[in-house]
Length: 398
View 1 (cartoon, rainbow, N blue to C red):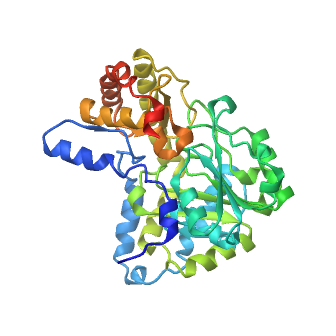
View 2: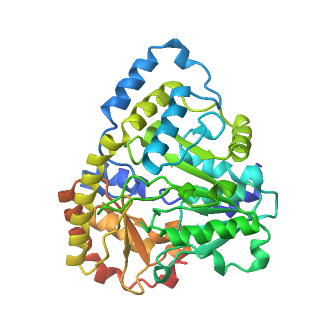
């Protein structure tokens, strides 16, 4: 009889665990399913990145171990991108680290500063890698609900002092998944000051920094005075360049923090495939030109979906960033039964808010991963379900 680790019992079910299986069976039955679940853009990766990777694959040296050093050209492309985008400077060798997608490093980061029993602050609803990293490190997760009344901003100042004194790491993600919230500079200044005061590492997940609309420009945490003392910032090529399956990202921070993460990763992986890093360098070198049409298309999709949602009685303010809509359900309507009905009865796959933690209950997430016409069709299909699903109380799903 195999005895599994207690930590497995601590982990909630992953948001995408159940619904894809239902979707597959429906498609096999010939049903038309509109998948708005995973944040996986339907646009192809940049041709420049594909061409650079293909060329690199023919070089035998690119099939060697990359280790944590990785491809020097990718490191250089990372710091050049940050210089152009945010006017911040980093050393490509000591303050930059290639990642096998930002997800793995976000989950591994607690291993650099957390001892069993220390506190890691986790936003909810939020990316499940944060909670997973806290649990796997032996930390005590302290979950902070993100609420509409505070613009979905994590209220670190409201955490009791005795908890802050035990906290070693806090996760922050703006533009935010799943709520699409953005953070003003004054808020980020407050967070950085609190982390410095209590000697807390800040993991700033900036995966959606380039997917912004209506003239909004998402900042880097390193544009905030004092952030270099305590922050590691994570970037991903997945969303901005439609390269989710390539598993490529990078982290930046002061040498001591990047060095600690490098040391941990040395025992866990040998870095991204060098040819993939060559493709990533080509994408970052042309980031401004490559991201612009992706943003324009996502904004068209956002506007179409927001208009359709208003037509079925689910109005929301168009978000200024990300590829998601965080949609409030009518009062008393449970998100999991609604999402299941949406898929089985309407052929529309959305993620229930409760899948991102109990604080996400009462919402569902739409990913803008199909064209504007299909988004309109999907939303209109959901309309008839609203009255029917209201009979399932939230409490019955907890």
